[in-house]
Length: 295
Image (cartoon, rainbow, N blue to C red; front, top):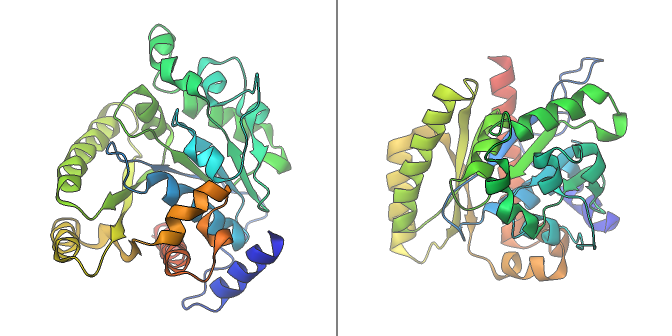
């Protein structure tokens, strides 16, 4: 696996503009950048984007934590993390019976950790109904983790894989996040879902998290042989402009195969077009983050 990571690093360093050395140069580690990977429509490549973006960021030296808030737990299994009996998970974090530090596990990929989920999250919304600060449970847990000052639990990026619905789990993610990364499938119905998500982001920004913004929209499952993909991409870019990343994630069989092997596609086949697209996406996100910091 380390050999695969080394190949990814070499590929990243060969790209222009360079994407290494994201740090500000300060001796004090900055607060992590928290990105919620969200779309209430399922099957759009949300989890795939979270784990492969996390892998690419880790490959260039970033310390990354993926927080799995989807009861299906696909981000956890996609990183090869097996569920164990009586395992502490993000469910326990939200209910306050465990801290993030207690549930984080190593993924086997250097500098990439994961806070896994379990099916218990399905009932979390009902259990959170009468709990104080129910919309800030994740935000409070991340704050507590950062204040511990543990170098082994210090991260530059925290990626939150949201469930494919606009429920209390997603609201917790948006309340904790600095920005939202939206994977958008290149199909007609995805456009309707995007408008609904944007409205939700605006409501959360107004009432719960004033710092929240849309970091960007990444077009996924793009098929250049299909006129509809081109039309959807054109429509989204005409509305959202430079919020839409130039990088598009193509339909690719290797991307589909990788989760069954418990690996991100960057490690499963780092030479395929899907892997190269996620590497370019990481480069573009890092460049955008630099611009935000410089502004």
